[in-house]
Length: 103
Image: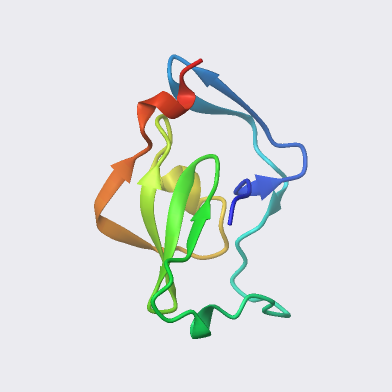
């Protein structure tokens, strides 16, 4: 899945190979409690399920989200402060390939 971490007037830019949040979105997308699940993640078996945003990659592992990568210029707090819950953090937390933010 690909999406931004927040929405509602989110403004970003890339400068010196790093992501910069110019204006934070007013709506958080990753909620602690939801009304409906439309993706049957529990039945995916061996499939790798990833959520890719402008600032991080999270994987679904054992029914828990795990932060696996951060965009250059972002911190764990930049992610956690914009979610209603804190995902687990991978032991080998990586950063995005710097070519992603090159022009």
